[in-house]
Length: 234
Image (cartoon, rainbow, N blue to C red; front, side):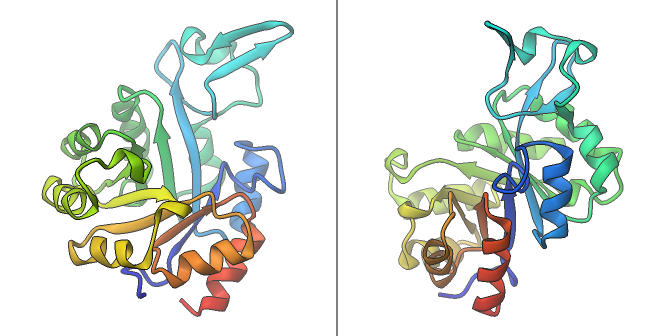
């Protein structure tokens, strides 16, 4: 099956997570050096509204656990990276996929990206609620919007979801790699909707996802990701 994007985007999940501490500047820099064409992370807002890149949104200190949302940026541990710091360290010459854990963070994320030349058109905002995702179009016409979910949650069926996303101006559907078939990818493409696959960790999985026509793949293993895309000749 043929993708809509050539070559497909290779998203480094939480940076080069298999090679360096996840969501660290070292991991993001390494991912780009290894050839990733995209970076991925999760976003949480601090108490003072600063977008921070972290998976679970919790800070651990000894036996205590506190939500990032309860802590101002200056009081967070130094290893946590803000979106602004990512752009300062890595520029904007790559696709950036952000899973917005709190819908309210979209405006703050777009505000940061707006201050970085070229960033908005390469910013992919992801959320499981397609209606929430579609509402973010008003923030910028340049954003790439992604409905990130599982096929079991697509109760209306894939054809109806594809048509709905196309009508709503949502650019892509992101599913676990086991949820995809070549037929589903072709169906999405008929509506002009991109097909993205996450948790693509091993060479056979990466190769199969590419054979199905995926337009982007998410992996912890950037070396395997880059090699698979090169081997597919896409």
